[in-house]
Image (cartoon, rainbow, N blue to C red; front, side, top):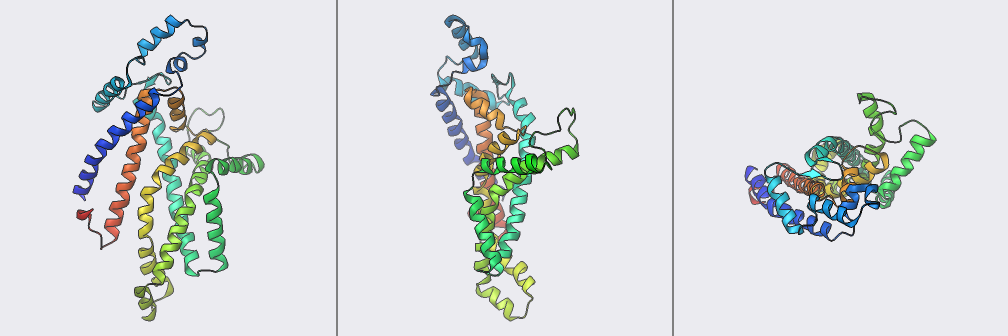
Length: 322
């Protein structure tokens, strides 16, 4: 296991280098002007000389390769640079927001995996039954629905129509402190919407995997030996049927991050979504590079986690050969 982790860590280095270089290259070709974004409305009345001087002070007049190398060497030493649009160090921007994004993604992912497993197993027990058809139909409908549409629908139903949950934010209006009760009530809608956006994939994969496992000879043999249906389902079919889901965990990380950005924007969740949008539209090189690197590292970590889980649960797979 340690060799696999070390090997993947070494392979991640060139990937991150290419990603950060691409971020600086794309940002340099962006039509947005970082100087005007930094100055705000003051740029409307400023003359050309003032804007050029500000551009020089911000360092955006230099070639993007030079700026990329300077940011990379500083980041290697622990300094992620200064965010121009946020007017604070990049490390502080990420540190203040990452914990809330991580909480949202963790809760949504756990709910999607658990609920998807339950629905998938129930549907796989009796293929073609009304329950199987209902679960499959619901999964395909949710799979086709955009996450922002689900979020807006949830706000309309639970916040505006029924008035049982807050529409957004982290705390109630006028509250100066984050309490556990407020946090839980404000987390329900965004985490639920994000979980629903991931639910179809896990449900369909579990349904297919468990259904195939129930038709295999070892499971038929367990039934022939007189084992109870619960033992056959949970002790044999479920373990074999969940193996494809472990691979799915890593592949869903990119969409989970993208979905979290949309959900955070709709519900005004104080995560990294607002910082990402600001960094992109303002061509904030240090912040944009740091956020992109963070997202890439999360995807690589998700793939590594999926491989580790697959190797630990499937005796046919050897981690030393991966």
